[in-house]
Length: 484
Image (cartoon, rainbow, N blue to C red; front, side, top):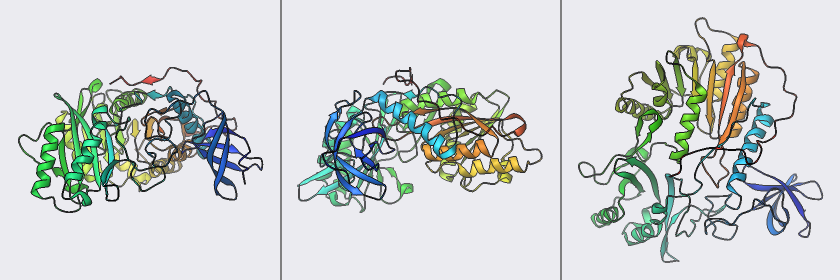
C-alpha cells in the first residue's frame, strides 16, 4: 500500500486521463488529476494485486503544462462535472498525449508502426459541441431541477449553470431550461433533453429533443412553445424510442431544417436531431477533407464507403469519382443517405444496408472490386471487414481485386490497433500513415485516421522488431479547423 507521505513520480496518462505512477513496491498507482512529470502524494483508495487507485493529496513538483481549468464545474471536488477530464492540461499537451496513446495502442495491441505520423487535426477548444445529451432531474429535496452532465463517477447530475464546451448561447440556456422544466406539470417524467445544432441560410438551427415518459398536457405544450419563441429553438418530442421523435409543431412555420455543410465539396447534409452526426462540425469539415486527400481517388474509379451513416464521406467522394457505394448497418440511415444523395444531385452514389459485423470474403466479392475504401466504424471497429480481407489473401477469388488503399477513420484506438494488426500481418497491407483528430477537446476520447496500402505481390512485411517511433515533437504545426 502506498504511504501517504511517499512522493510518486507521474510518468504518463492512461486512457481515462489519470496519472500513472509506481510506488516504492513497484505497484502501478492511478491518480486522477495528476499530470506527467509531476511529483505527487496520494491517499490510497481502491486496491488490487497489481495496482492501486490514489486520491491526489498534494503536488510537489507541478507540470509546466498544468493550466487553470476554464470551467467552474471541472475538478476533483464533490459535485464536479464528469463531462471533461483534461481541462487542467494545456490543450496542445492533450493532443500530444492522444498521439502517444494512438501510437502505443498500434504497437502494443497490433504490433503496427505507421511509416509516417501525420500532423494532428485540431480546432477550437471551447464552444465546439454541437450535439449533447443532457440529463434532467427534478430534485425535490433541493427544490430545483438540474439539467446537464453527470457528476464524476456518479449517477447524480452536476449542478451546472454553464458549460464552456457547449456553444455560448446554449450554455446560457441551461438555467432557463431548468426554470422551464420546474414550471411544467410533467417535471418528474422528463429524464433527458438532447441537443442538436444545424446550419441554415438564416443562421444556426437549435433543436432540442425532449424525452417524456408520460403524455404532455396542453399547458406544458404551451410552455414549450413559449420557450421556443423566446429562445429561438425547435422542440422535438420523444415519447418512446428514437423512431418516435417528432416536431412539436410540424408543417408550415416549423422553422428551417437541420443540416450541416461541407463547402469544399458543395455538399449539404440534412439530418434529424437523433441521427448520428459528428459533435464537432468544424473538425468534421477538416476530417472529411483530410480523408479524401489521403484516399486520392481518381475520376474513373469506384470507391466503397463502409459504415457510411448519412453519407458524410460518401457524398463528398461522389464529387470526385465515377461511382461510390455506401454500405451501412441501419436501413433507416441508408434511406436518409439516399435522400441526401437526391438533395445533392449525386446519382453516382448508391447505398446498401447490411450487418457489417458479419462479413466473409464472398460478401466482399459480391459488392464488387473497388480501387479504394473509406472505413468509418463505431467503437467496435471493423474486425469482420479486416478478417474478410485476410481470407481473400489466403484464398483469392477469381475476378475480385482487393482495394489498393484503405483510409480508416476510428473513434477507438484499441479496435483500430486490432484491425490494423490484422490488415498488416494477415491481409497484406502496410500502415502508410496515422494521426489523431482532436474531435473532443478536454476529454480523453481519441479519434484518429490511418492509411493502409496493399503491398504489391501480396508479400507480407518483414517482422516488426524496432521500437515504436517517438511522439511527434511538441510544437509541431497542427492542421486546424477554421475558427468559428
